[in-house]
Length: 65
Image 1 (cartoon, rainbow, N blue to C red):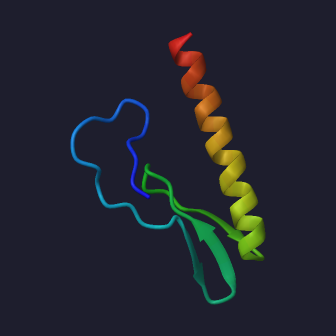
Image 2 (cartoon, rainbow, N blue to C red; image 1 turned 135 degrees about the horizontal axis):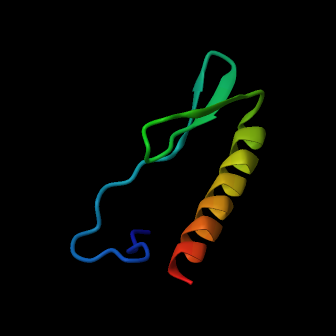
């Protein structure tokens, strides 16, 4: 499902998954171009990604308050 993110207008760009693995280690990609990881499992990487997104949203919200 393609939806606009907060503040976006116009055509919705293609987005791919953020999780990837190299050998047996898992990572997630960030918009900054810096990958986060390694994690021992996909579940650990997903949990870390969720925390990262929550923290970034909290930081962004503080900027607009």
